[in-house]
Image 1 (tube, one colour):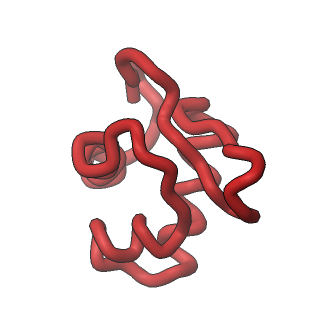
Image 2: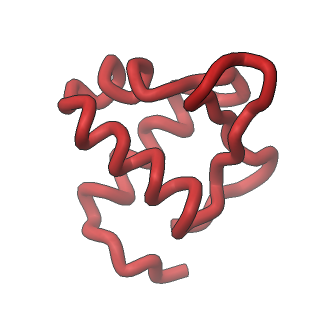
Image 3: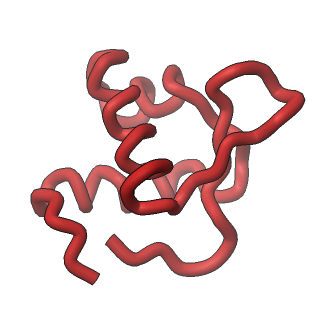
Length: 75
């Protein structure tokens, strides 16, 4: 599916998915994996949750924690 995002953005999201898998993650984990700023990491989280709908918030683990949806992601 064509998401309208750049090839680099798509690749970074796939890298996150491959690295994180089923674990719960937050902003700091995105910063660690991509080597980006916190602002950029927050932008990625918003894109993945609101636009692409490939992550969902996790309750009971603190604010700003997410997990990837099970199954294939299409970006």
